[in-house]
Amino acid sequence: MTIRVRRVAAACALGAALTACGAPSAPHASRPAPTAPTAVTSRPPTLAPGPAGLTPVFKNGPRVDGKTVALTFDADMTADQGPRAAAGEHFDNPQLIATLRALKVPATVFMTGRWADEYPAEARDIGRDPQFEIANHSYSHYAFTGDCYGLPTVSPDRMKADVERAYTAFKKAGVPNAMPYFRFPGGCYDRQALKTLSAVGVTAVQWDVVSGDAFATDSDAVAQQVLAGVRPGSVVVMHCTRSAAPATEKAVRVIVPELRKKGYRFVKVSELIGAADRHR
Image (tube, rainbow, N blue to C red; front, side):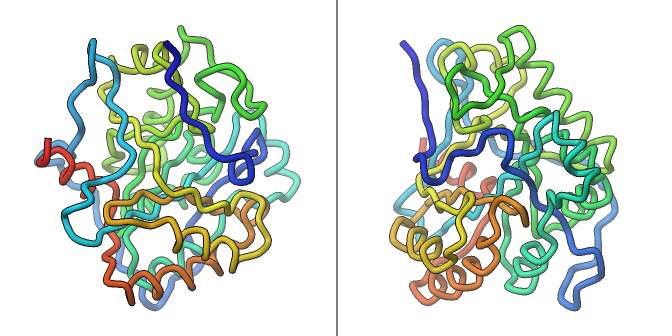
């Protein structure tokens, strides 16, 4: 039986065009000093494998542990977008990262290895900032199933290598402790993909709130969609690129204070997964 999760069409016409997030090119007044790489003293929380040892899938945290919410940002860059970057297209959003820092909002960035190769200094800057955590979004941003919003596909025999290649790219860029979490490109997966990735030891992370920020130009509409969808334990999927999600930073400046007024606390995905594991 096929198990497939997709983003709604308005938010998920990702294709090969969706792109990534980066760090400010100049120091920000409220930015924490980068931390030096340190040894990992304990493994980040993960979920136990599913039936038949399949990769576990996480969509949201417990609804009963208080008002917590995780904002996540997909740093998408496909394997063939190098020429576009060389021609001047911006696959980062420094202002968004600066805003998250200024608002003191922890966040999880699901980054492709191709993006880390293109912007190693920015990947390192985000990865060494304790306010953020970097997780795996594949190397190439190719789909792990067929018929996934027009994305090229990775064959089953290359899926594991593609994920591992992304971790290698993070390490090469200087990211000290990339998380053992994986988000499927396009949000598309099936039983074969879950079975194949079980050897990598990751928890697949989806979401329960679609922001609708992909290609959106109306920041108020994005903000209202998020505010209407968030519940305790929610995982919100957003993007951060100047070319394909231009309204996101402005929307975040509305979303954050409004959710705080409602009593929400922003956390990274790792905290929600840890809470979910305790409730199992």
